[in-house]
Structures are given as C-alpha cells and as structure tokens.
Image (cartoon, rainbow, N blue to C red; front, side, top):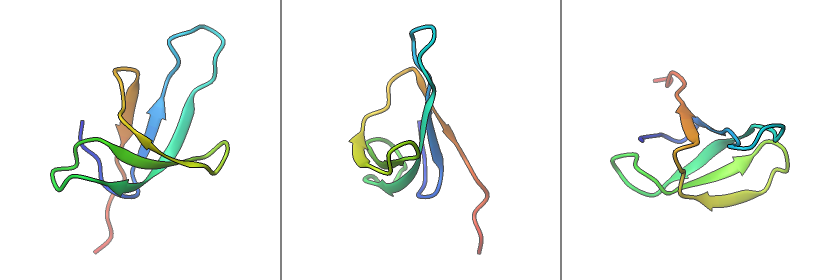
Amino acid sequence: MHAAVGDRLVVRSAHVGESVRDGEIVEVRHEDGSPPYVVRWSDTGHESLVYPGPDAEVQHFPREG
C-alpha cells in the first residue's frame, strides 16, 4: 500500500451493517508512501495515526503541478 498527502483512506468493516469509514491522508511518514499515515476522519474531524489493515484501500487523486 502506498499513498500521498491528499489521498483518501477508506476502511470497510468486516461486519455486516457497520459503516464504511473514510478520511483524508494529511501526513505520510515514509518517503516511499508506505504506512503509517496520519488520517483526518471525515465523520469526526479527528486525526489519528493509522496502520491500515487488509480491509483498507487508498483512493488516489491527481496531483496539481
């Protein structure tokens, strides 16, 4: 898994009926884009350090410049 600042992390629940959680990646700790990431969650606005599991995916967005 690789990401850049501005990408979106989407975490899908392994349990039926639980919601999908997503947030903006606001910090990438490694130059190669590997985890962990600091994510600002869209549902709470809270920022946390995340080590994504197999239930997570990164949605990439085009970069300007």
